[in-house]
Image 1 (tube, each protein chain N blue to C red):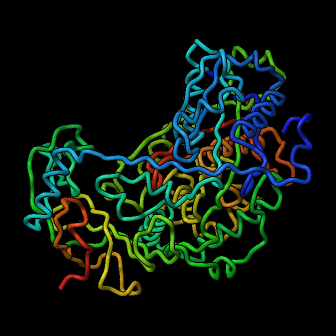
Image 2 (image 1 turned 90 degrees about the vertical axis):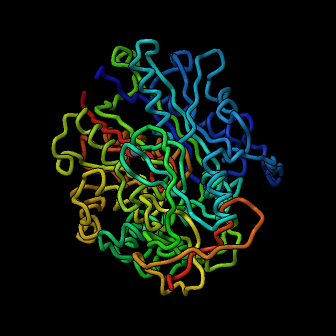
Image 3 (image 1 turned 135 degrees about the horizontal axis):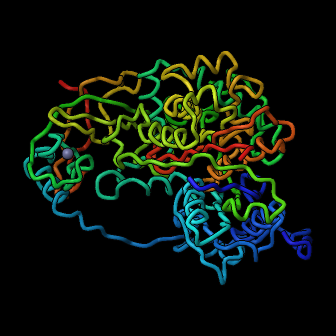
Length: 380
Length: 157
Ligand SMILES: [Zn+2]
C-alpha cells in the first residue's frame, strides 16, 4: 500500500470519573497534546475523524459535540461509531486517498456518566434478544465459558492475566487501576457472572485519545517522530451471538491474517515483538492472542504461566496495563495504538520494552463481533 | 483544563447536570419475526427459516441468510428440545436484569436448527448447568406475540 505514519499522539489520563472535564474538555486536552507531539498546529490538519457512541454520550450526533474542541469547524469532519481503531482505519483511508495529507482522529467516552449494564443491553437486538436483560458482562461471561470449555483454559490462568496487567499498570502514570494483586485476590473477588470475577473485568472509565496520521509525502514537514503503519485491516462476524461459534473469533483470524500479509509478516508469533490487545475481560487477552495467530490455539494460558507475555517476556502483551488497567469504551482501541507508538519510539518510560515492531488491536460489538488489527513499525 | 481556568473548582464541588434519555420507541417486528411470534403464541411451535443455498436453518428466524446473502424462503419447525452450547450464571444484580440473581442465560441449539437461540434457563440449579446438556422449552400462556411466549428452557424430561 501507499505509506502513511502516525506522527503525533495524545491522551488524557484514564480515570474512573473525570468530574471536572466535559467530553469537549477531554478532546481539547488530547488533541493539543497530539498536535504538540507532531509539531503541528491545527491549520496543518487537513481533516478530522471523531469516534463516539450516542448511547454512551447520552445525546444524538455525539461526534459533532466534540468537533469544535477537535479543531474540526471549517474542516471536513466525519464520524465513526465504534472503537477508536475503526475511526483510525477510516482516518488512514482518508490520508491515503490523495485528498487529505493529514488526518486527526479522536475517540472519547465517559463510562462514569451512565449505567454500563443498561447501555450495553441496548446493543442486543430489540425484537429477539434485548428483553432478556443481558449486557456486555453476561454476554462475555458466556463467551468465556465457551472458550474455556473448548481449550481447557482455567480460571487460574484467567486470573494471571489480571495480575499481570494490573501489575504493568503500576508503571503507567496514565492508567486508572495500578494494582499489585495475586491470583488468590482475583479468584476471591466478587463473582459477577460465571466464570468472571470482578477482577476479571475491566473497570468503568473516562478518557479521550487522539492521533495524527500523515501520508508519507507530508511526514517530513513536521517534527513528530513517525511510526509507520505496515498493515491495518478489520473484519466483522455475524451479529447474533447464536450465529457464531462463540469460542472462536473468526473475524479476528481474518483481520490479523490480512494485516500480517500487508506487513509482509509470515511468522507473526516470531515477528511481532510487542502487542497491545483488547483485554476487556481476562479471557479475551488469551483468546484474542490465539485467534490472531500469535500463539497456537489453546496454548495462551500455559504460555502466560511461563511468563512469555510478561513485560520482560518473549512477547510482552499489554505492557501498559491494557484495558484491565483502564477501559474507556471507544477510546480503548485507539489507546492501544498510542501505546504501541510509545513503545516503538522508546517513550514508554518504566514499561518500555525492546521492540521495533508491534501490534495494536481494537474490538467493536458484543463478544468481539468485529476486530481491527494494526501492525506498526519504527522504521519505514 | 486551560491555564486560565485552573482555579475554577477550587473549594467547590464540580456541578453535575442530571438528566436522562427516555424516549418511548416501537419497532415493527417485520413479517419474519411476526410469523415466528404468532406461531409461538398460538401453536407453541418454534419455527426457523431455512436457506436454500447453504441449507442452514436459522432460529430465531431471519428473512435473509447472512452466509449466502440470499432470501430464506422455507419455514421449518425446530425444537422444542435442544442443547446448551454455552451459558453463564449472573451472580451480581445488574441494572439490565429483570429477574433476581442468580439468573442463568444460555445459548440453546434447538433440534433441527443450525444457529442457537439466546434465552434463560430455569428449574435447574446453577451448579448443574453444563455445556452440552439437553433442555426443552417451557411455554407461557400469553396474549402477547413475542419471545416471552417461551418462559424459559429447563432440563429435558
Ligand atoms: Zn445460506
